[in-house]
Image 1 (cartoon, rainbow, N blue to C red):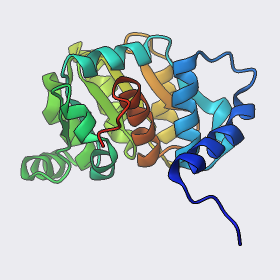
Image 2 (cartoon, one colour):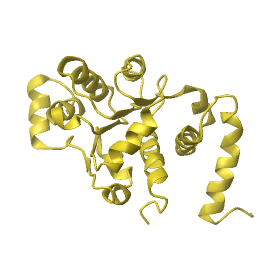
Image 3 (cartoon, helix red, strand yellow):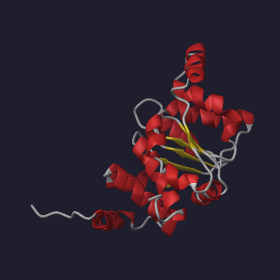
Image 4 (cartoon, one colour):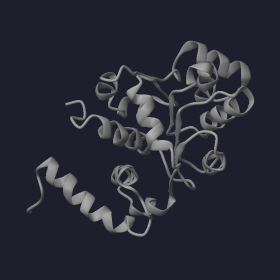
Length: 212
């Protein structure tokens, strides 16, 4: 069987296949890159009409990364997938507290998920940072609560939790507010690879070497 072997050619062909599915969405060049990376990560062109990007989200994320701001995530899968080498060039790091002892203790005491507890512990550290939620709707709900009740303002929220309980509702709440720029997808789809794809697409706009 003959098949494409070079990574660059595989990527090029993938983007060619994705491109027609973005027609009519009125995307600018940077939005097209984020949409394409998300669809490529999912292997699912049905993402095209359900991706939602706030008009200021990409520029806000680029500014935050360039200023050395950190990225706070809900689960280790998101932390692992983000191109930390590229982020470090700008002075930022990725933090996940889901497995920390203080997070476990708070979650048990408050009877909440550990991802939710982690965001509560991060608290003011989220101000001006990037928040990426790829798995836990409860973490996204908590970040939005902190924004609403404590005026905590991340630079941008990439909120794409996946699943059938709370995921669609948390993302709808994110998309229905206009105080914090966001990247999200509607409905039950999403997941850690989607959050990673969105973040890495923006990192690649700033660092063409992809950290290699």
